[in-house]
Image (cartoon, rainbow, N blue to C red; front, side, top):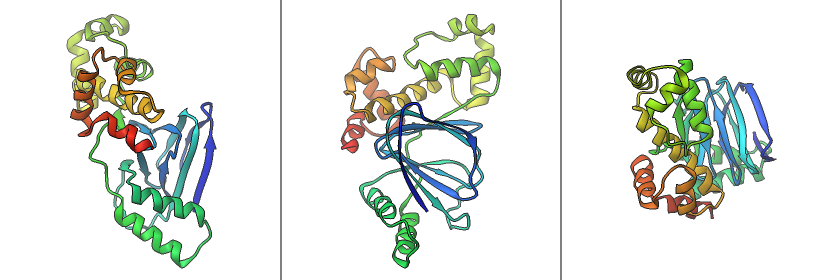
Length: 237
C-alpha cells in the first residue's frame, strides 16, 4: 500500500501506531517524527523506516508532498528500531513507481522486493536526536530543539533549570550517550537539514542554527554527516 499526501505546515499527528512497517519519505515537505526516545527529521534527502506497532507522532515543518509506503510486517528487513535511510535517485524512482501503481500486481511485488534489497541504514546520524527523560535536561533539550541558535552554555542552562554543571554534564552523558556540546551540535545539524531542504543558502543556514562563520558550520556538518551541506541542496533538486 502506498499513500501520497500534500501536507501543510499546521499538519500534526498525535501518537499512534500501525500494524505494518512504514517507509516515510517527505518528497518535498520536511517533517519530524517523534518516538518515546528520539526526535527524527525527515527532509527530502532522507526516509525513515518505522517498524510495525512503533508508537509515533509527526509534525510538518515545511509544507509539501509526503509519501508513506506500508510494508508487510513479515518482510525480511530485521530492523526493530526506527532507522534513517538515504533516498538515492534509484530508491526515489522505485517509490515513485509504487505510488503510480497502487493496485496489487506481480510487477509491484517485484519492485517492493528490489526496494527492500536496496534500502540501507544511512551512515549519517544527523537525522535523529536522542531525547532525555530527566525533566531538567528534557527542558533544555526541548528549548534547544525549538531554538538551536541559543548560545547559552551549561552554566547558564543550570540557572534556568536549577541544577549544577556537574549534574547536567552527568545527565547528558548518561541519558543521550553524548556530551552536551556534541548533543547540541547534533541538534543544530539536524535543524540545518530543515533549512537546506527549503533551499536556504549554506551561509544563511549556518546563521540560523547558531554558527557565526559558514566555515565552522560546514566543518561541523561534515563531521556529523560525512558530507558537505551543499550536497543536501543539490539532492533537493
